[in-house]
Image (tube, rainbow, N blue to C red; front, side, top):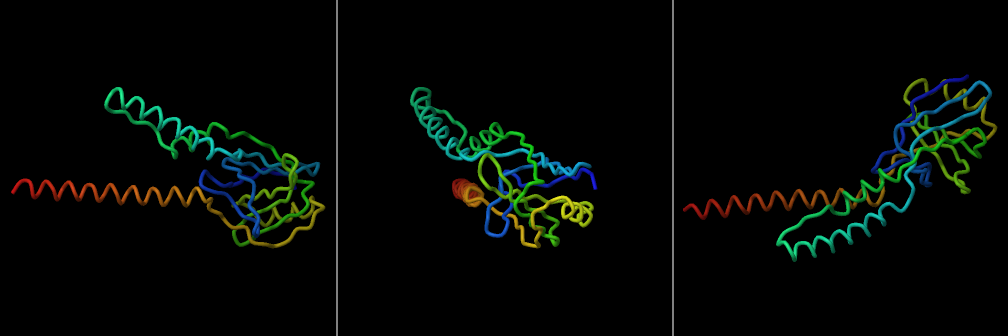
Length: 194
């Protein structure tokens, strides 16, 4: 059965995990298509690896420049690692179109309406995982009829990147520090007025 479905991919903070294997870092918007001649295609945006390290280098250079300008002018501020990381990821993202009809294995997570395909991507075997919300059972029947690889039931879970956890912890610490500084200033002003 031919058709198009909206595929929900990962996001900036993480993608999917097929069993214990990380899936390819694909992000929204995604489109999953099955054509009349039996080709299965997934179109989405891909986040190439290495953006975090590039952001770290740029943040260090920015810190050095901010320090030099602050020495001369008395004050200066610049973006930190998180902002650079987000910007570099967004700049490096690229559209990919994956042909999935020759996948080696297919995993179906019926409970969460997710699919995983083990396919060749840039010379390596990688898992591609995504979520389909509408007409999932009909889609699984179509895939089973088209794909020669074994189709098995399995677990496809969301995963958090280590960077995600680090960013969340950093944001929590930042919020606590801001709240503490506000409380200290309010306490200081209340004692100063007496």
